Length: 87
Image (tube, rainbow, N blue to C red):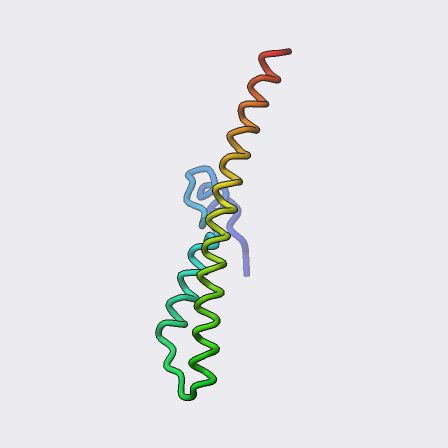
């Protein structure tokens, strides 16, 4: 199997490379699986309900984390601008 470096370079330069999925894509996939799963016993039903609640918490904390990252990136940009102006 050969690797086409020219094609890879062209895709990279043109911005056509495959971007990695974000966490919300994975969360949505898990949510779809849990919603489409049909439990056969009460124990399975309880486990699915627990998993759905945990997934909801994961989604909440992920959003919170992304918001904090965004704020920190903005602060970093301001600090870098101030550092460049000071030199």
